[in-house]
Image 1 (tube, one colour):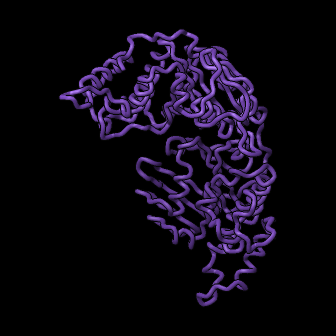
Image 2 (spheres, helix red, strand yellow):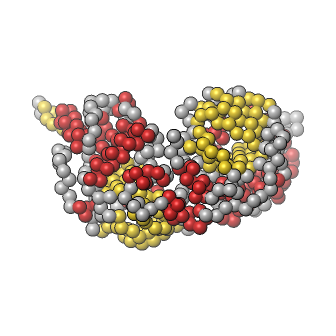
Image 3 (cartoon, one colour):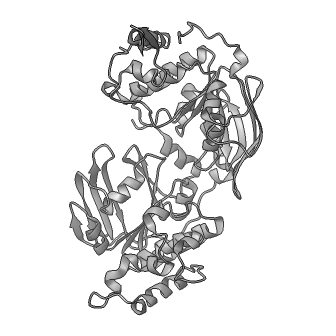
Length: 512
């Protein structure tokens, strides 16, 4: 297990070549004929919006999934990974966004967990703790890290833990290292530490695939940027010739330059339907304030982890808050709760409709009534006859395609299931609706129908808050957009006066 002072593999060991690699999940093509060579000994950034195929590509390289077709070569030799163990054996190691360290163990124990060095004492095999710490210390020293291998991991900062995760990966002597969003939870100082380590690994000849959403990081650490769009290779560019505009254009195509046409003006002269002031949940979001007026669709933009869904859940009363007030139709709540917010007139279509929005084994009829049983019941008694009008109204108004409302809702398509979630809350006669990722997992036609529903309800006076990871959707749907980063609102923009390129830049810019 002794570590070599310098890498002994040839420079080409880290060469990575994809040829017409595809991955299909049933009728859905997650990755389509991807072909590209990643030169050894460089930092290659991998960019693309959600659903672009990045995760699929990384899973194929890590041996988590197998491609449907195409070939992969590592170090100039054909490679076929049936498992992560096969990828390890070929020198491919992945550091995932979620840390895999055990806090109660030491640095040395975490680095060599599962393969501790053994020795014999009095005829019994025991762990050679001295050798483990010696080899761990040598590895850390080689990587330029001044840490005591006896130190418990729980005492380290998140940035230091991320560095230990990389040190653990490097103990396998990889030729190719995949870093998946390594700075997502790091402060600026910790990012600098990580970048210093990445540069050192590059100098040692390690090929690094660096997945990130943060544009500014590319120009600090990457040698090239490769972009995927809708499962297809969109291009690769040397960072010396790259600009943020060029990369965003590769990620989004022509839609990056498009502005949304002007729509009707929103009357904000009267009192708001929803007024959120100073809402705070420590460690999650801070000092969130906004208003929603009748007929207004307020968009909230931000990258994954910005805190958008967490804010919606807190306003709706699903999660606790530490400070702030929520006022609905003039009535204020310091500690909003689910029942109070529902009675006040809030409705919420959650991002995970299958688990949080619907009861799959129940019928479409039952699901449409679940949130409004209090309105439907007569003297506390619920009847099918009393429910029927509520069910028929939503099926008609939302154009829900359902052969038989009494069949399980799981029999419907994704788009129609989403309409059922919306209809369930429309039956409560809400004043304000939260739409969290309403187009996720639905086809293009269903997406358009859902947007039409939101616009129609807004024209009837409903207030709405719209959240989507797809920034182009936020631009298209919303009348006004709040931008969140790291749990804070950092900008308010007019969707008719900003391009997708500019909105994306605001979402990715580091908070100062």
